[in-house]
Length: 144
Image 1 (tube, helix red, strand yellow):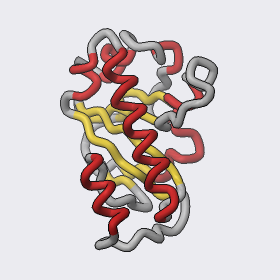
Image 2: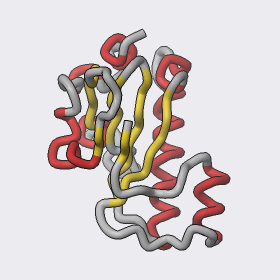
Image 3: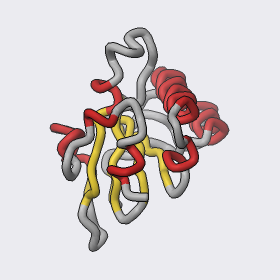
C-alpha cells in the first residue's frame, strides 16, 4: 500500500499533504538521499489536537519508497525522554485504534529529531529507557 492509501483509512485522512509539506518549517530536518519522491505527509499532532487535546501526541508521518517514517521533533534532554516515550506510546495506541493498524506499522520507523542541541549522554539511563521503549537516540537530522 502507498502512504496515501494507508493514511486515507485513518482519522487523519483529511490532513494528508503532498511531499513533506505537513512538516512545515521542520521539513528541513529531513534529507532525502534516495531516488524516491516523498509520497505524502501528515501533521498528526495538529490534525488530532481537537480529538485528543490533553494527550502527548506524536508530531509527523511521511512516506518515502513504500516506507512510513514517523518523526517527533522535540528538545532532546534527559528531562524530555519521558515525554517523548509517552508520545511514542500514544502513537502506538493511536495506530492500534485505526482500521488497519498493521499497514501503519509494517515497514515503518520511528525517529526523534532534536529541535536543538542533543544533551542526552549516550550511555545514560535515559538512553537505556529509549532503547527499552523501542526508540533510537535522538539526532539533529534524518537522512532517508
